[in-house]
Amino acid sequence: MRLNELADNQGSSKNRTRIGRGIGSGKGKTGGRGVKGQKSRSGVSVNGFRGEQTNLIQQMPKRGFNNPFAKKFNAVRLDRIQSAIDAGRLDAKGVIDVAALVGAGVIRRAKDGVRLINGGEFTSKKVTFKVDHVSKGALAAVEAAGGKVDLPAAE
Image (cartoon, rainbow, N blue to C red; front, side, top):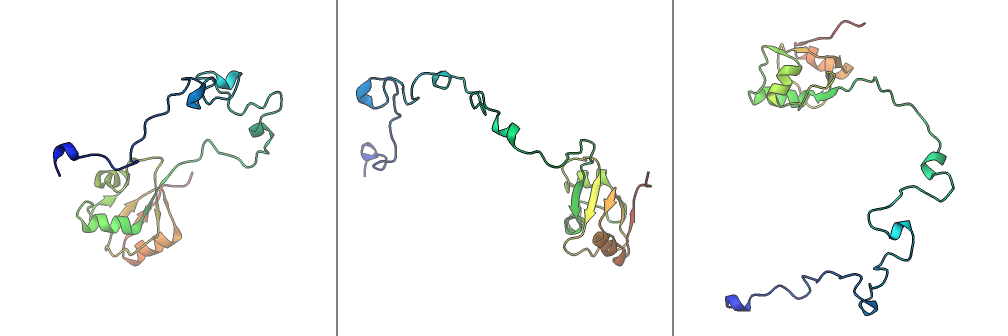
């Protein structure tokens, strides 16, 4: 094998279709766009328009409610915190709060707070958490290990 004998595998590359190059090309005249009208023009497409009928999205029934004031919490499992403590990124003797979790790389950014949820094993002794919400299972796991959870006072 020599350098001048190197070639791509048969059928691995195809030439692009040149549209609008005559009737014999198979993509001539209308160039694969059908015939006249707004959608045959370049850069124009009205999504959802059905020609004097009500749009389908407007005909669909609307259900439920999306609360714009709902708080978005970071859900953090206890085993992720345990692995950060084991790796030395979190100090188990200090208070573990939002800033400590962001600094340790457990969460990316502080949203409206942190919600502790149960998951995996949590074995660190006497860990103090200062979070906004905690599940019953996570609270039981932390207290069973000898730690405590400080929650903000209910408004």
